[in-house]
Length: 286
Image (cartoon, rainbow, N blue to C red; front, side, top):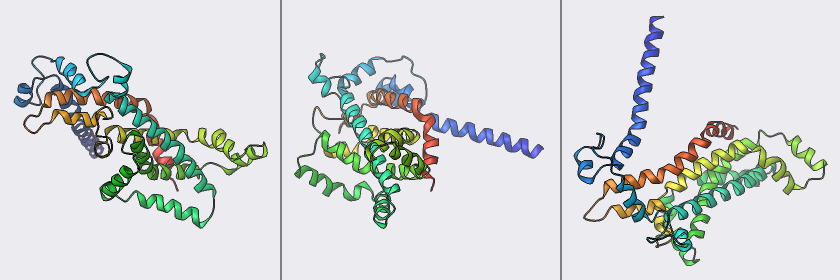
């Protein structure tokens, strides 16, 4: 009995320490976003003596977060960092969900050696690191004239499809074929069967795929740096680089900018996170 209590106390202590470890980056980010540069370098862990809201005003302007220029205009809004990040992230994620679910459905329902080979090719593609193919791929996209927002969306679709197809593939195998057969008896063709029966049934996996890909694409720096590093097309992570020059590093403004940048993705995660465990578990079943 006493040994069980000791084990429980030990688990609580480990849990508390782990929680502190994971929460500490958010604490450091929040408190330092409100400090002056001098105060930040003096101590990164203490609370600010004076909460500097001006850091956020300067960071918003330097990042061109909401629009380019001092005054609002529709042209300036469509070139802002927020619009670029949201447009690329949302469009890429929607395309990944649609094409990956379609591909996985066809691969599961088509019982042939070709479908198995294609599926294992998608799985093998997950093992290839992006750094191994980035230079020839970016050069090829440049020759096609696709080093722009359209081109990077196409690349995110390619790199994000493998793992998404793996998740959809595992989940679709658990859906009874009799549902599709009943729909076909009622006169539905393959297109209607997918959109009326399969696609709504995949809701837990849709949410999981959306969360994983949204977090990855929203925070990605390397691919946008290679593909769309031009004024008016830069995403939020690319704009963050403006705070770090060769002779000066404005950590206090970078912290304010980072805090602004993570708020949308945290809000999205908390609204959708309850589905992620269910979706990953279901999608990993064989």
